Image 1: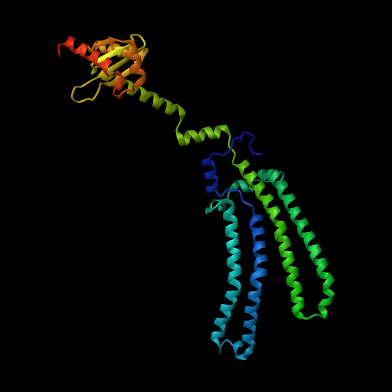
Image 2: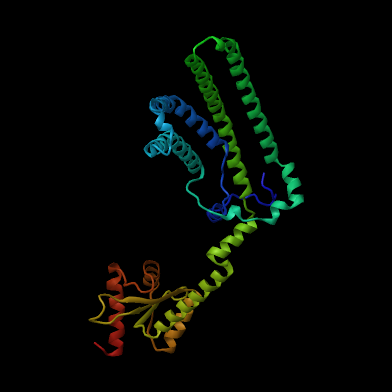
Length: 350
């Protein structure tokens, strides 16, 4: 469970990213151990025979000439010896190193951070230490280690039992057969440990994943604060949007004075149109509003001597089909043209 009862929400992507930067990831130490045992088993099967033949050829060459053992006489032999030891040791080192890297990367991806190495006072807090001793994590560690001990003991018992049944014969069998028996039981022991470590590793990783998810859980307050931090305070954003609407409304109202006509419902809708012959393909909606805004548009139109025409069907059609800045649709051309022609006649412009 989450350490803080109030932390009931799944971690956000930003919280996960922050945890990763601090080195907090779901990681099982048993998976690299299990992978290493499997690789050692494969090395014993496929690499040891080659290494045996290679080492045997080296020893035969070494003792073929006594001067090979005198470093001051044969420096070339020293270089050859270094090469042999490199060939014998390097593959083992490389394979084990790659196994460790791959088994960790497979769990949590590529991650390079030094933050886990930074000392923290909370780690030496005696009260926090006592809490960790009685935690679910400690209980799981105890059960896991007991399980590993039981498995290791059982495997060792059966392997040693089989080995002791043949140990009395070691006194009179050739040394190559003794080596065969030792390699055989080493392979069996390694494979058994590797095979049985897999379910333990899977169980351990599943718990680590569960524990990690619980530890990075967030409270609703933390999610709210994070959203404020990265997305802005909702109250501030609301105030900004309100101010933007007010400024947009002021600009729209300022355009009403430039209109050629305002078409109204007459109470509920008002749409101000502008048409410049030769410059516009069709009349443009420069302001529109409903209810109180419609009344405000009509008031500004009267103050600026802009003609107001009452045509409820046309006003509703224009309001619903056009946004401010749009040209009127073709199906309304005739109706609007009649109104504009009427106004121009009154003004004596036609």
